[in-house]
Image (cartoon, rainbow, N blue to C red):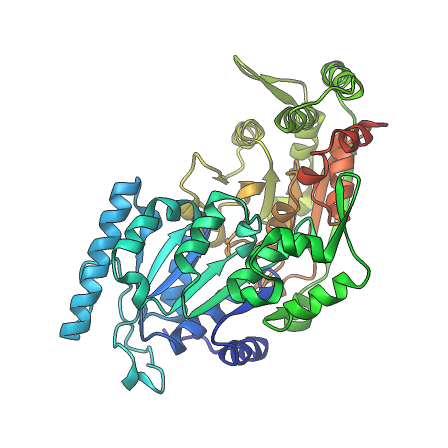
Length: 494
């Protein structure tokens, strides 16, 4: 199969990257083809092994994109191995196989490589490159266990390019994972960082990703960066006058921004709200948990942040028709589930593919049982299912009408553009989850639809509505409620 050509905005981004070979950031909305651009950049720098870091669910997408856009790229997916020992063994074996291929000029046989396509054309200057370019696919969480192995081998000396997909995962510079990535790859000769949202909560999120590209822009010390560009006002750090302009100017000395509306001719997005009331038992449980929570917040005593998030989450669970106890989940009468079933029974929904997002496992179980009872064929996309198989079935099997997914897993999925409707049964507290899940249906391939509709099921006078409003205002609820005073504000009139 011929390799799809680059679009105009992808050519522009690639040219920008080749003019910044030491390091650059690709800040693109979901669906603009960031992976395609990265693979073309790798094609131009395929003399030595490449390391691609991403979230675990993103690795499968990379495999599929490699087979389409760069079939000559052999790879080993370290993320597929379970356990640190197996990963170290796979890393060592694949590295030795690639070294043998360098000496013998033969394809590496011990790696999990992609079959070489006869239609794949080599780069114009392929004489200076190895005939079998190679990549390590790693997920962020597996790197900490492989840090010593990377340092023990000569791999680091040979790695030319490090690609960090969804680099917002390393926005916190103090975490062990971010420190490990910094120690291992700061000496790489070229770096490419990709994300749809560099700032998900605070402007300070930019420090750690930009430091990976060029430490000279904001310095090598987070506290120095914070003191220079921000001042403290109560519990918050507020940007100093003109700081935002200076930060933005420095960011775009090494980053390029691709906006979806400027690159693709996509259908408009339509947002709808369906209002519901709590059942009698739901109101009773909601009032009980809310009163206990407010009492603790007004008491003035110090509360653990984990407690604040747990109680806030429990209110969301009750809005969805259940709550967890030490003995397991307790189901409640739920008008939201009845409304979902009634919605799917409408004539306009019977013959179309619909995506349903939910935040909690028990909600997915209840939706699954309801759809099964109604005889609606569907697939589940959560931790207890074969996610890669199910998303392909939804895209390719005309009998499968419903895709039920956990909203936090709505990343790196390219198969949902066949649907023009997404229903949010419940919402995650994280803004990034909402942005990513919305982008699954509003991306390249959705041009076949007149519009993309997002329907939110909301229960009146609950925190469910407050969370929806904050997410629509592009504010991260999870970070917002860490302060007890703000959590108390969110409970008012809810």
